[in-house]
Image (cartoon, rainbow, N blue to C red):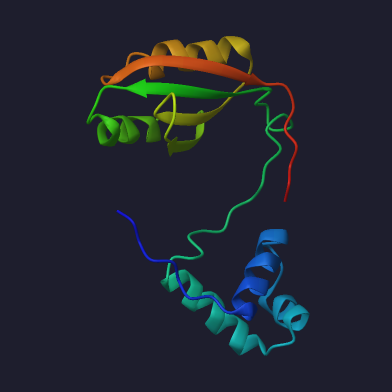
Length: 149
């Protein structure tokens, strides 16, 4: 389900950079930093939402401070044609923060955040590995996150 990219001009790109930097800033502050009117900023944000360039607003949470002291990338090898069903099942596991279908030596890459190593083990062994269509998993524990944004 590939979609064409939205047409973004320089102002759209600057607006997106500002929102990524601080999504809680007021539209008034955003408009001021971009040197446009508040109404124009609202219109631009609305258009970017309508075109699904902005899909949601969210908070960036420090997982360790939030009690999720263990993080890992988990790779999956899938049975052919099982992606859609596996993807839906993975969406129901709250410890999974990101799911990607990828090319290479495995099919799916997951970001899993858990309270501790025992909790991570529970998620992988009790919820991910038993899913119909999952042939193999590998778990790579994250020692440290380096935020780039």
